[in-house]
Image (cartoon, rainbow, N blue to C red; front, side, top):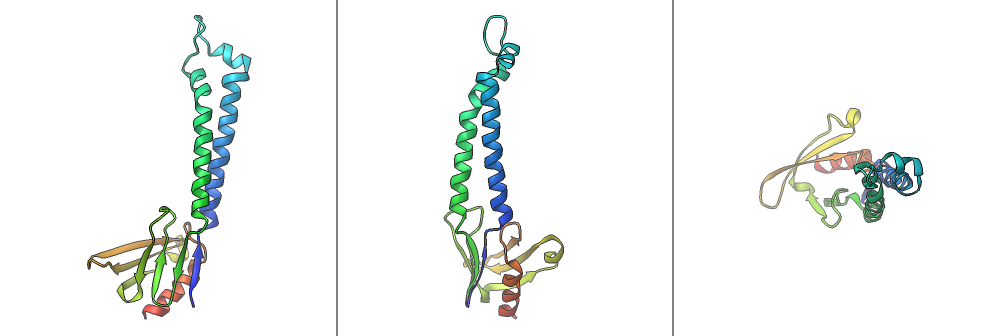
Length: 159
């Protein structure tokens, strides 16, 4: 039996908000930079050259649209990321990394610090990696949903 914790709705919602902000800012700046005659007159010098504000409003929209597209692609890449507590190991596919999966065998876990789980929503796993180094990994409910079930399963497996 394995328990899964998918990427949190908090993370997905934040990416959607950033995408909307980029699109709205691109529309607003593009309108002011190209179509708003009053804005163009106010920010054009006596020699007919645009000042820095007008130049920014004319050049920024493509970059903002590009940023929104990149955020959308990253959001699509994150949709399958999850934390899996399997029979013998914990499999992390972190929200911040697209390609790299990390596996933590239960026998290498030394301790689980869950003192802040109820109040702040995270716990810390301390384990030995393949090189014998002690590594601490913070797992937060802002990154994954269903962490309470994962934490209960981990505690049951290592005790």
